[in-house]
Amino acid sequence: MRWAGGTRVAGMPKTLTGAELQLDDAPAREAELFLVDGNNLAYRAFFALPEELATSEGFSTNALLGFTNMLFKLLSDYRPKGVAVAWDTRPVHRTELSEEYKSERRPMPDLLREQFPYLRPIVEAFGYRNLEFEGWEADDVIATLASRADEAGVKTCVVSTDRDAFQLVSENVCLMMTPRGVSDVNVYTPERVEARYGIPPERVPDFIGLKGDTSDNIPGIPGIGDKTAGQLVAQYGSLEGVLEHVDELSPARAKSIRENAEQALVSKELATMRRDLDIDCDPSRLVLAPPDRGQLKEMFRRFEFRNLLGRVEELDEALPAAPARVEGTEVEWREGTLEGLSLRRVGLAIEDGRFAIATDEGVVVGEWRPELEARLRDAEIVAHDFKSLPRLTMQPADDTMIAAYLIEPSRSQYELDELAEEYGLVPVPSPPADEETTALVRHTESARRLAGPMRERVRERGSERLYDDIELPLAAVLASMEDAGVRIDDYRMGEITARLRDRLEELEARAYELAGEEFMLGSTQQVARILFEKLELTPGRKGKTGYSTDTRVLRTIRGDHEIVGVIEEWREYSKLLNTYLEPLPSLISEADRRLHTTFNQT
Image (tube, rainbow, N blue to C red; front, side, top):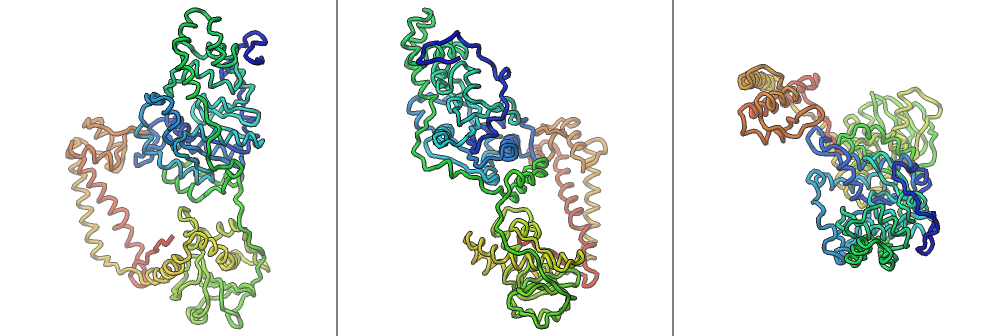
């Protein structure tokens, strides 16, 4: 049904609930730009998912998981050109209108507060933009950007569960809401808003002016609910129209509206999103950056999002990163020696006693001999993970592993083949070679060709001095340290190991005595049963597998029973024994009785 100028054209329409409407996400699939209310989504995720969701160390992750799932869904399901997440700041404008605005909203829960600092970095890792403008709430920022996009004809989807966001819906702007949790979505168009409330989207502030909004402490008019508010706005066109025709209403309704008219007008203004903020942000420039897969993987590992970790590669299909292309992939190679080669700047790879040296003339592969190092003394060596090359004492001119680290420190690994693919380089030996030779040719040529573009990116990040003056010299130092190794007194280590085993047996016996039964001290479930069921100590947070017995929990109940300290000491010595003392002897080199470590520089 349509209304014009506040006069009802036909009988009052039957409004529908969200469940009765067909609210598929087809309109969102046309959107180029997504505007997300960050605070709203974080709260929604926190209350939708159980608080028991936590890492093995006990750090709560329910809000982070729900929030991240939605960000992942936007990219994988809708493939937009741009996504921006807006965040609240102190709402100066609305608190000037009403000191009561949001005054009764409960403080942020502590478990959500702990997770909040990690939300913005996750947004950035997806390649999205974080937006925050002092004095304005996220919905005003979103309203301004959505209006600008609408005027430019850009299909836009607003992601929020706030009812006042319905007012933004237009022919170019749809609204995505999550009725349950954060996985199911309902998407509203102008027709769907009108079917649900009986009013067009632009009349939603009038609707809230009458009905109010308890979540934001917007009072409205007492006694008016959704149905009545929708009917009144539909019949009279606006809140002001209702006030003008108040005499046509029942005496009781008219009395309530007259007494609260000023309050209703303020409520309408509080519910009206600002579309005219003077903010320097052009919707057309909110384009996606390539997802930082390394940082996403690091975060997913940290928060133990194992399912998401396995899906990171899907992002490449949704938004392939635009790599810097390095021309030429076919590489000529030959078996030979260094004789006759120009060794001014070369790529070098050594594996299992064979070397590959890449020059502008091609790649030479041969048997590595220590005396060849002298031939390379005056050359500029380019390698990937230089310190892993056997017994080389010179300093590299470029190390693509170190460069990759300086470009993207949060990345979890720096495999050369993966980096080469990202830069558009996959060297193919010509003529074809066996698997081992192919790997050597590929690695040395990849390092040689990647060194220039990667150094340029290091320079752009302002890290070239760090690269040349600290990291590259350090690579040579670490290589010497790894080669020298550490002398281990395995006889003395054996004595310490035996003494620790004896102490562990003493601690186990004492724990059994205090518990009144034998149990496995290495089993968190059995320890939890003894502490919290048999001895009835105060438990910590309960997870899917039972009560936690991590370090933080044991520390809080240490003074409640002697057995807690015994368990803590047993864990400390057990870790020392199992992680270091018992494995190390098997790692000592038979050749020089030294332990040759690997130092992680990246």
